[in-house]
Length: 182
Image (cartoon, one colour):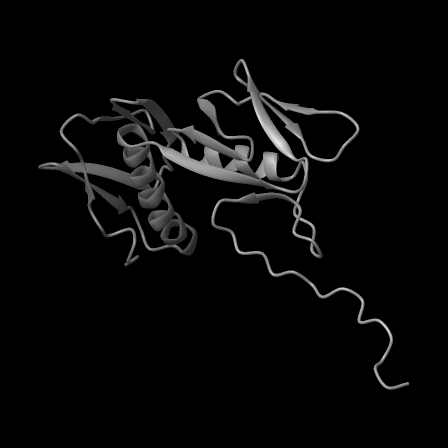
């Protein structure tokens, strides 16, 4: 049995879970999320926990068992605590500003780059070099952060560009120059 799939999912008091017509919906204080279940995956409620089970031991069903459990656990965490991902802007003259709900990046291009948040995503700017992306859907927050990072990926030699908060960048060495002693 899947090590991840067999773990029960604890439910906080203020979270309501409904399973009907092959779809699970999780409602909490921050919002509501929906996801389609596979036909071979079943969910049962025991006390204040959810248990995810599979119908058979076929290879593809076993593969989805742990995945569905992890996705449902992420939904429960999202509607209670939410998710947040940070982007750091590194480089001389590089900055971000928030205008309305959009983020405007000045990252070395001849024009500023405007980014509108996807549905359920919010931006927060700290200073001029930090952007926080927050929302209740972990997948949507990560996707939005990846789209923003793709605007100006970090440079391998100087390290300038956009990177995730806490991401460690290994810089390449530049030219070695003339050999000493010749």
